[in-house]
Image 1 (cartoon, one colour):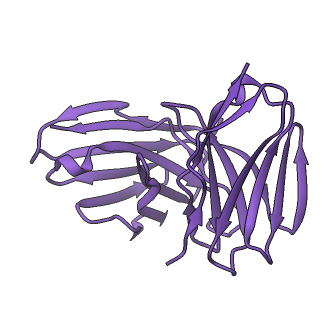
Image 2 (cartoon, each protein chain N blue to C red; image 1 turned 135 degrees about the horizontal axis):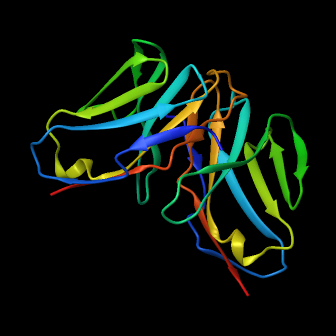
Length: 108
Length: 114
């Protein structure tokens, strides 16, 4: 059974701090890794994707992938109240497997 | 934003009635997906399509059927709705099923079965 695990949270972070979201996966053959953001009552929207070990930066977001340890992280720098949402991790080895999401709350 | 339209956006119906949800895309993407999302379960794949008239089951396909007669339309049917099918349903599309292609989502349909 292929699994993607995320801490459900809520993860509470002060405004301006770094929010760190983590995701572990069971399928060692996984090739692509995606982070989606979902606001309450809305649909998931793609934030970032990463394919190779290491870091990938896009504005205030950094995705970190460690295939040997089978985890992928999302860092959000200078967190804003508008970042408050549920963050979904998805992992693909031709079949996309979704985590249940981590709820992030940014406190002003 | 990807051109994906789901209809209806909200629906309330009774147990035992048939229900059809529609997903319409303007991106000419080959792959289309139906998910349901329930608290604590995340997104679960119901069915997907890899072309006109080509569909396959996902992990929670029991009680659901799909049809795709045109590239742009993917229909999800609950033949006889049950209360356990109360959920939020999302349609997604992708350009292909290679690992490096993300999926993009419609706005969802909130379905309540009383």
